[in-house]
Amino acid sequence: MFSNDGFLTGKASSSNSGQTHVFTSFPNSAVDPEDEHFGDQSSDTDKLVLPLPATAADAKPEQSYVWQIEYYQKYFQIDTQQVLERLAASVTPRPNKSYFDSTIRQNPDLYGPFWVCVTFIVTVGISGNIVNYFHLPDAEFQIDFSRITLSAILVCLYWWLMPTFIYFFFRWRLNRIEYTFLELLCLYGYSLAIFIPVSVLWIIPINWLQWTLTFIASLVSGSVLVVTFWPTINSDHKRLSAISMLVVLLAHLLMAVCIMFVFFHISDSNINPKSVTTLATTTLSSTSTLTATTISTTTVTPKAV
Image 1 (tube, rainbow, N blue to C red):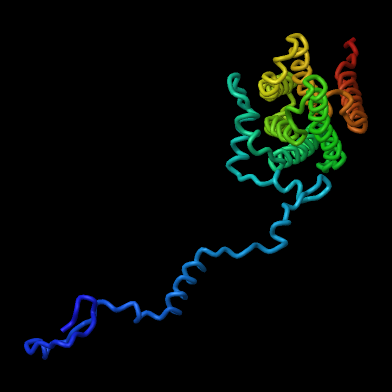
Image 2 (image 1 turned 180 degrees about the vertical axis):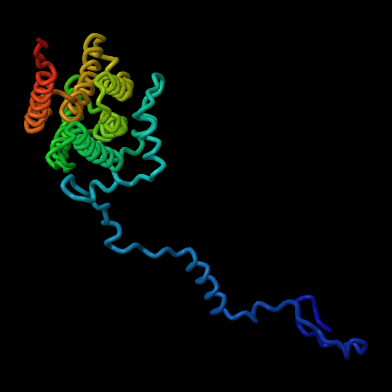
């Protein structure tokens, strides 16, 4: 009944008169040319890419300047775990591993150094007031805020002056910028972390213990700085390299000694004159009372006739 191309033929079979036939193919004339053209357009539309707006090609990343707050946001993008790792590494010198390259180089921050310095300043100010209170038993405990101001000046001067000196020294001697100024601020900020517990132990009024704590803390923290800078300066003259690293270590020790002497060292100049006068008056009155008692007990008795 049907030919191979799907057309209806003139012959009909009596046996197939009751069956339903399904057309499986259609002639080319059965397809609408407009539909075929529409299908080609839909496939081309899938490959079509819309042009970008005119402003998108000209868009540039926003540039921040040093005097803008946005410039320093990247230096405060750090989590607590990284800060703890840097604090631990700043008090554990490793001769074969650079503290700066292993922890700070990838992401230098100012968040940790800022809070280390603030904590050190407050600890020194409060501990210095406690030392004065115990050293002057007759005085009432009062917080002397001038000590906090003085500790802030000393700590901040050291935190900013030493990185500035090292930055220009490397730039002058090596003729290149090996460390940025903010990287050096980060390095020196973390190097002060060991002095926070030491400033609490400085309250103990024992001279040899205060000096021992000062030398140990300065040696441990300063050695981390020396190990960090030595690979950079080692390519230069050996004598100059050794002298420069010795200056770094001595400056670290000098800072600790100054803070210990100003706030915690016990000497005669730290005694209040009023308490000295009171102590002298009490001593003289006790001495005169004791003398009068001795004279009264040593009177001569008359002899019996």
